[in-house]
Amino acid sequence: MNSGALKTFLAQNEVQKLVQSLAHQINEDYKQVSTDENPLVIAITLKGALFFGADLIRELTIPVYVETIRVASYGASTQSSGKINLVKDLETDIKDKNILILDEIADTGRTLKFLTELFAAKSAKSVKVCALLSKPSRREVEVKLDYCGREVDDFFLVGYGLDFNEKYRQLKDISILFNA
Ligand code: 5GP
Ligand code: MG
Image 1: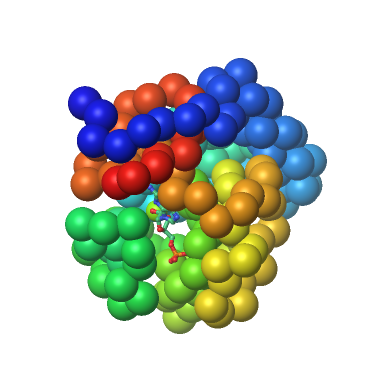
Image 2: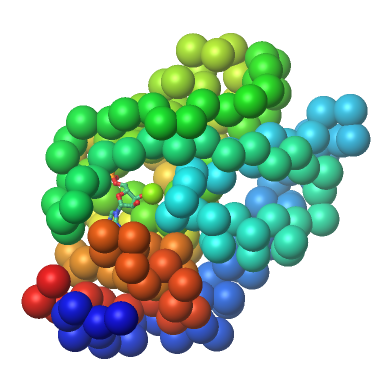
């Protein structure tokens, strides 16, 4: 299934440690505010954060409600087009709800800026962001990452939900893709 060379960047156990650490922080921060009547609404960004979301949510001990949203910014390349399209919206009313967006990686920041503004416009009570990875050197718009697993240099990464032309998502490690 290879079209470029892969070099392991974060092995499966390192990825899982980051996930557990993020979940621990989220459990602590929301334990007073999240109840069965007012669960934290988790918005998983499809498709990339599918695996991250599944793992992180199972480490949470607070009541949560799981939602998915899909935006697209990348075409068939390793560069963002810069334009965000809403492909699939949330399916529930989030007015007065606490929202936590899960994304696998913050790059230019455009996706997360778009989503935080969208949820604020839907009158969410609070909107926070949790990104497994972040590439600060690539940021084009400012976005606050309330939870960030790890900052990384400007590599193109695949695995654990991250794809190149839909390939590599199922890999358990996160790897650098060279010569794509
Ligand atoms: P942003 O809007 O911050 O530029 O891009 C965010 C999205 O671009 C991420 O959620 C992810 O889907 C994709 N992306 C950013 N960097 C990478 C990368 O290194 N590898 C892959 N496969 N996707 C990336
Ligand atoms: Mg994504």
